[in-house]
Image (cartoon, rainbow, N blue to C red; front, side):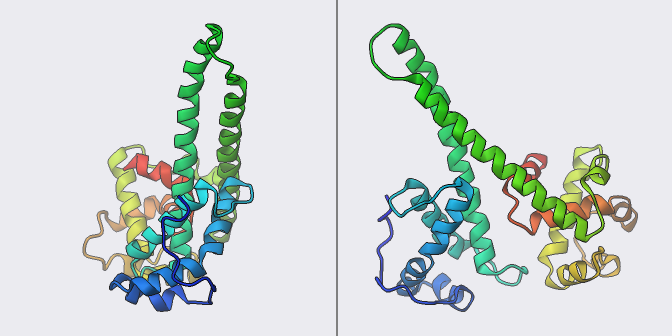
Length: 250
């Protein structure tokens, strides 16, 4: 599976993603293969950080990361404030977390059937080994989730916010929460607004209200200010688990 991509050059070169993305998206397959070759160590490192173990090119996780990296080259949209490498890292981490979850679910289902086989003495499979694997994968997910929350807390601190303050900040109605997500998306997708947001550590209200498709009033934005700031931070960072929560909201 790791050989799913043909390698254009065995010698890895220092190739800039940001300088190459236009040509890649225009169909330059030769350059795409060079980029994939040059950035395979980045893919392995990103995957390893999620799996919390050393990943080599022979691992399935590496192949999944490589496919995600290739996909990110097509999906990246310039002008949204993120570099290609930051966007690619988020896509890779999302795919690996999804893979770990699916693997854990599959193992749990397999455990259920093999336990019955052991009871009937029709095989020598040790169900306990499979349970341990499932628990290990769950531990990886929990550890990554905890690390992500700690990073989120650090980001909040830059805006003088705490997790405790946010406990009761979410609007009660689903449509209001969805509108808050839309406001946060508009805030970080507009490069000018995003820059002001990070420079001042405040929502640039005057400029934000000039956006035609803003789904709420100034009063609503002000009332949900802390909540919107937290959403913008989540959306603008590779917070895989917190973004999952936002997808549930939508």
